[in-house]
Image 1: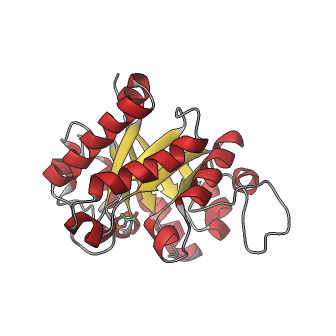
Image 2: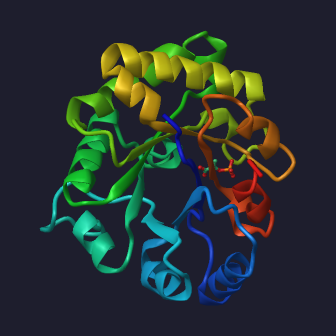
Image 3: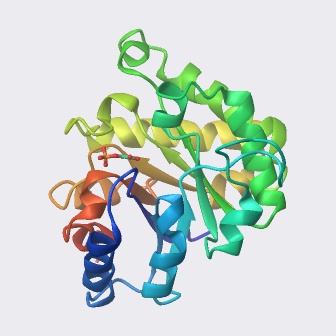
Length: 247
Ligand code: PEP
């Protein structure tokens, strides 16, 4: 089954109205591969603003959400609220949520299930830390992160997994195409053995971690890499080259 290439930009806690206007102008004026699904992870407060600036071929995502629709959860945002301001997607389990804010696998999985139930599409992030890779634990770590998601996600149709080795995020150290492909192939095998062959064949797995215009083509050529989740470079015009990596 052909998997549509999917490129996400994670703006993180960056931007203001002026810079988001500029970025949206640049994206709107670019010639982009029509076979690529594009998802822009925008800070909550600018989702409405960005949505209004962009044509609908650009999907807008929140970068987090909570696990229930509403209530006494100061500072949190629900999937229903994200939808209400124009987001169709949410990024969950990003390494900064896991390691800066201490979110555990179980909470992330509950958030994912609730977001899906509310009709959002989910970019579900996973990835090992440097010490875990050096200890030969990469497969065990990503398997246990996937197993946590699998406890709550029953339908994977609206899920994209982002494999993002923590040591490659924002560091300028990209996984080599071979390193990334190895983990993606392992995830494909894990899905076949633990979910189903159909999900293994159809689920898109993005790579994330210091993707740039210079390294995206070789990564995109790997058979199990179905797109990217891009941080720093998604704020720059080179994001266009990353979207067009398969061209
Ligand atoms: C990310 O934030 O998901 C990411 C991969 O960041 P960067 O591309 O800057 O490494």
